[in-house]
Length: 236
Image (tube, rainbow, N blue to C red):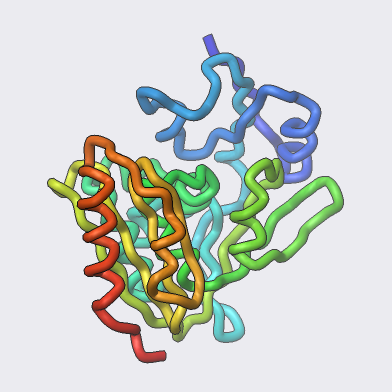
């Protein structure tokens, strides 16, 4: 049986995560409950659900999305840029969207994540709490630090950010073979079983080591990425 510790504050959550070597944050719980989860079955779960980390608001030309905001809340919010709302809707199940959080989905860095490509393309800022206090990092800086034990507090996106996103899968309920997002010249690709690439070059997908999996062959997914790369920029 898993051990769960309820954190009473953001600072306490960070402290526990650093003190307990085999631990993980518990938010929506969709990853913990998933068959083949990346979270060790013996890991101590640090419950952060009671912390004030949810909600969507506008402030000084920015849209601020709290870490515990669910995909369903994002999908329904008129404050959020349309292509981000569309990414949240990629989770086909209402039950899943009502549980999965934006930070949980992004922080896992999965190459089949619903929000990963869209958020990377926004070039937004991530506010985190670490042992040295609150910090703001570019989303790319946070993403590249894979062993980060900080608590994500929110994502800060330009309110006028526009972009596009495309998902190709065999069926709506299946993992996407390829997701491509583009926003103001920043391109991001997530390719199932193969990897993630992003940057200011539509052909950045070529850096991915394409591999066969249940969503399709390596050559098929490479072809899909090349087609999506030719769809054009958002026109920021």
